[in-house]
Image (cartoon, rainbow, N blue to C red; front, side, top):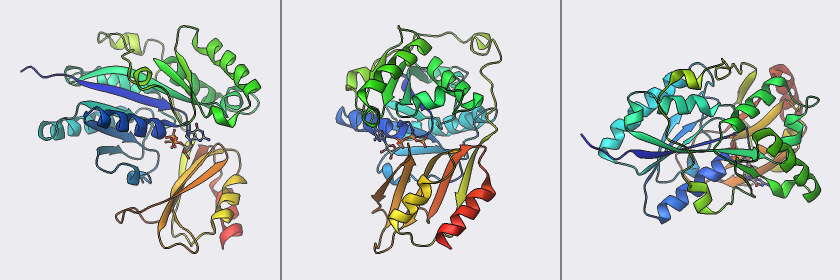
Length: 320
Ligand SMILES: Nc1nc2c(ncn2[C@@H]2O[C@H](COP(=O)(O)OP(=O)(O)OP(=O)(O)O)[C@@H](O)[C@H]2O)c(=O)[nH]1
């Protein structure tokens, strides 16, 4: 039976680099063109605290996003489910957002495997880079080998790179970052500078993936593809009090640098609605939530080699 293949975009990038921001822009653009998007979200931790962002779209969640060996089985299952739903309500484009610690090659490999290769056409792997952290993450002094390896995997597998959060770095430093990034990925790979993931729609949606044949060996020919990220953890804190927003912000800011990302849903003193908060690049943003059916308050912290006890003690000191 003939069916048109569904175009797929993979959005990759390290923790807090701006993947969801770009995903939301892509959804908006597709809707403007009267195209129906489908979304697969892979989240670290077992709670999606961002469900309020997707109002009418069909979102398939792959929670507890284990990153290496098991992601492929979970993803295959989610894709099967997606195909079943798609029979009833077909989408035009599928957007897959990996976790901040995913290697997009793992996702690509699933798309190229049977039966999915008959249903999907991978158009582009878009990788976000957080300009405000790029030099730190590349430095052997301030980041681990694991993080550097992961970032280089995400860069190597990208068809296009968005150097995001340029508003957070001085112009002089931006030059240095661009040079270093180009050294890393080669001059042929397109790199676009952006604030809040803003790049022209044509550039974002351009087909950049060459047609590839299925050849397992070509994808995993050096054991580099499978790589364990065991030191990356997500900590979940529940049973939360009402917070004073500034105090929560201060607490997040003083956490050990191993905590790379925070997000959650919290109650704020003096407010009678819930707030989503995003902590990335040392900055915290709160957004009021209107939807009623959202998760109960929860804080999720993601990082490398986090000392749970230390976090717990610090939390108790601040809030108990
Ligand atoms: N200042 C600044 N903030 C940004 C920019 N892009 C995104 N942000 C903010 O950074 C935070 C993280 O952005 P997300 O799009 O959620 O990042 P992500 O890559 O999806 O994060 P994870 O899923 O946790 O890996 C949010 O508060 C965004 O609003 C930017 O260009 N500049």
